[in-house]
Amino acid sequence: MFISCDKCKTKYKVDESVFKKPTLRVKCSKCKHVFTAYKTPPKQDDAPYVLDAAVQKAAAPECKVVCICNQKGGVAKTSTCLNLASSLSAKGKRVLLIDFDVQANLSLLLRCKNKKSFFEAMGDDDGDLTKAIIKTKHGIWLLPSNSRMALASKKYLNQEKFEYFLREKLERIKKVFDYIIIDTPPSGDFYTLNALLASDLAIIPTQCDYLSMNGVSHIVNMINVIRNKTKHKLDYRGLATLYNPENTVEKVVYEKLKTQLGGKMFNTVINRDSSLQESHIARLPVLEYDKDSKAGQQYLALSEELLEI
Ligand SMILES: Nc1ncnc2c1ncn2[C@@H]1O[C@H](COP(=O)(O)OP(=O)(O)O)[C@@H](O)[C@H]1O
Ligand SMILES: [Mg+2]
Image (tube, rainbow, N blue to C red; front, top):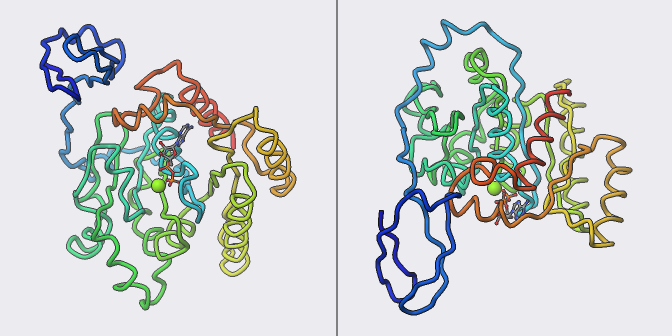
């Protein structure tokens, strides 16, 4: 294979076996620039998963629907979706990810950009989501998102019971998965409401700072309103992400969050870890990027805690 220097563009022929990880730091012998080289990305197999055949064979396991939500952006919602799904899949669970964020970051990380989404499946396929579900290379299935998802609010917000669309469509699909995990946008719109009403559990990732604590209160209030108005049995758990235990403020806020959520906080915390950022560049779950990384091991621990709920 060939790699080329970012700066002087000199090309080098290297053997793939020099890559112990999906990326490699290399020094250009011509201009002395140090750059990151990438192992050739795997080709995405985007053959649609034939759900009907699987539905017939499935033994109807107990499917748990989990949404990852917080109206604050940048709190690791998408990172948590991908890595929790990958950890559950490593434990032999069948996992479907639903990208419900119009930014489509989860679809981008799974190399499924500009594919058919929930929006097209609702419009063109009569609500048959199985037509849009893709099997990824990581043992995880994905219902992708794309920019057209932004049109759904306008199209459906004034329709009766619009907030139950996803829940209704998932009934059939639930038979073939152990877990369905939904990534949500940083807002309380059509998608977040649909995700919350389709879920058994909401995971609220949060950084340990003052403004993030405020974001947690917002989403917990929203969950409580849903529980009171609809009798929907929706539980929730907070998850400390991007956590730096050496920072005193973060330590204090973490303890406050535990009190605020009255025990509904995961014991596992996800530390800030550069491996996770690197895994995004390589577009891999962090466990596949570096199975010994701190973030990889912490997401595994999180999946174990989730299995016990
Ligand atoms: N454990 C972590 N360590 C370091 N960086 C992280 C970690 N988790 C997430 N990030 C980074 O934080 C940013 C926001 O993460 P993302 O998952 O996109 O959040 P959200 O979906 O809530 O907007 C991304 O740049 C991501 O690479
Ligand atoms: Mg996101």
